[in-house]
Length: 168
Image 1: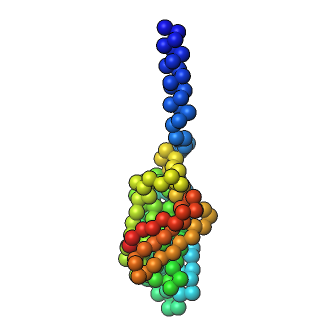
Image 2 (image 1 turned 30 degrees about the vertical axis):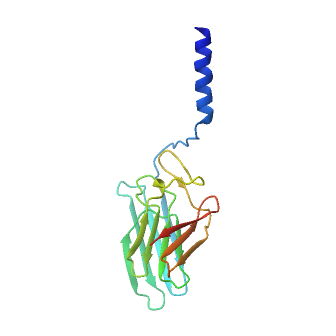
Image 3 (image 1 turned 60 degrees about the vertical axis):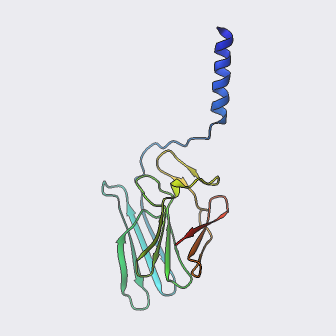
């Protein structure tokens, strides 16, 4: 009887020590964030307010030369913005998982969505996630990002420094 109890305890301890860490959250994400990124010819502003039940999140782009609004649309909550060197593409990254369907979005200058990706479905050794709220997948505070128009490939530096490719 005692031998069985000790064997069971040792086996349970062994499996607990081998299990990956689980990061628990105290509460659901309720953040408010405003981001702004500009290039020579483009200004992009993102706002998300998840302190309310409606979880408003939008992205607005303005042509800096003419002052004309190019688009203002609902998008997933974004935590990092990038504009391509030619100001033709806008990339939004997010480390928010809670009620955020996509953690990567690519839009054209006109606001057309070229790519939306749920990063939580990808199995990368360098990414970690909390139980509900956060997904640590891109290099913070500022990942390297490159877009190859000829192959329609976006490359984003992940949390471990590896460049990850996405087809547009």
